[in-house]
Length: 128
Image (cartoon, rainbow, N blue to C red; front, side, top):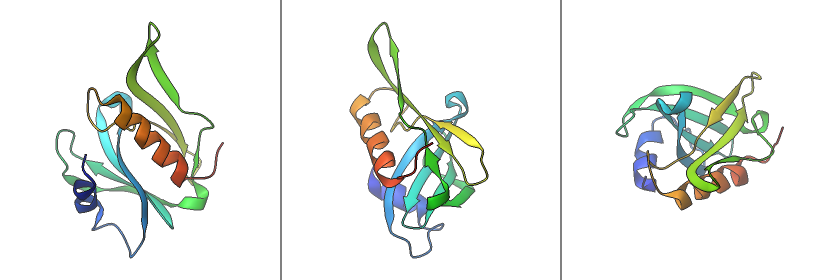
């Protein structure tokens, strides 16, 4: 997903904030997709259409200092081979946790998934 596509989807939800990371993430066993943005002040989740970048509304927005990531991401492997799925646990400000798969697309692009995970861990400093 190109940065310009992410910016177009997020621009209505940003309030003069600097975006540190923006990436697509699959949730709900891969049946829904959000675009996760980490800014200098907030972490935002914007619901997105599954096959296209269509803004379906802001799901939630929490202060960045109240959001935490699990210590380590979990790369899914089948018979020792990386499948391209990496799961990240995120704890929101209200204490609920989400399991995210920050992929660029439904299949392939293993390095893109790893790049998204690194960007997310660099942008959110707190761990649980």
